[in-house]
Length: 292
Ligand SMILES: NC(=O)c1ccc[n+]([C@@H]2O[C@H](COP(=O)([O-])OP(=O)(O)OC[C@H]3O[C@@H](n4cnc5c(N)ncnc54)[C@H](OP(=O)(O)O)[C@@H]3O)[C@@H](O)[C@H]2O)c1
Image 1 (cartoon, helix red, strand yellow):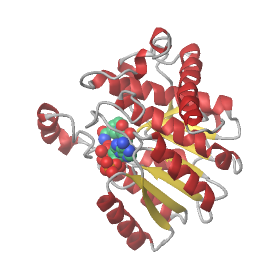
Image 2 (cartoon, protein in one colour):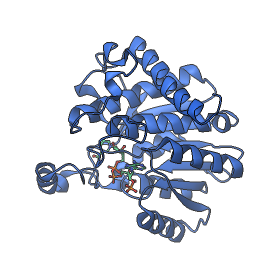
Image 3 (tube, rainbow, N blue to C red):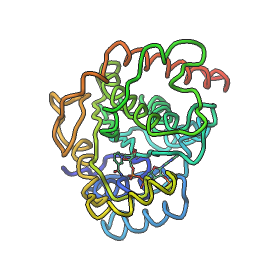
Image 4 (cartoon, helix red, strand yellow):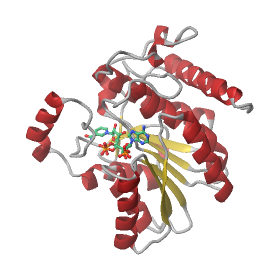
């Protein structure tokens, strides 16, 4: 699919799976904005992508998805220079974050992987809707191993978002359930936007960088069996460019629609998760003197 004239954002497009995703979308002619935290790898990514594709419409922005204020600033800047957004790839993520909470005091794994992207997409939704844009949510098969209960979303300070002393695999799994349910709910709430969530496979990236010695040791033994970042990007590229048909809102593995694991995916929890997340967004925006 030719993407000339299309505007694309790839979060975490500086390294890992995100870089070859951004590269392929640029190769097809899109104007690509990469978001990352590390300025050096962002610069390297832009140089590599421009050199390999001959497309100079590639830029980066340093944005920490653990900070609502940085996300807000980025979204406002982006909207002042772009009237539309055709494809938003919500790819950035952490397995074990180096910090325990986000700027808003949210548990960091859920806060970065899910809530930061929820807020980013919320702020960009008008310019996505204006062109019937596509949102791609990179998630993980890890969503199958835990559950988000209705109880964990109740109260003034819902348990799902509460900081834990040391984020464990449970927080990563829950952040991925939230991502998968988010993709389903987004297309219900905004039928003008199409969306897919996905598992990229097990990929040889630096995603385990803050996971401690045991993980790093396992990773160093196992990585020769893992897919390359280029292979890992294929489902993201497919979900960004294909006609999703009945797969709109669905979950993809190996560029094919995969049935949800029903135990984790529940309409009632999904709606509540959206409402509670929007409540957190609203609270922040009100603190900035802004209306929804
Ligand atoms: N690798 C796998 O086997 C695997 C399997 C299933 C799912 N996934 C998912 O695939 C996605 C990409 O992971 P990857 O394997 O490519 O990992 P990676 O190489 O570690 O890349 C992660 C990306 O996320 C960005 N990021 C992390 N924290 C951020 C924050 N607070 N604000 C902004 N950006 C942040 C990083 O930016 P900086 O480099 O600037 O920090 C980096 O660009 C993740 O969502 C991950 O959960 C990966």
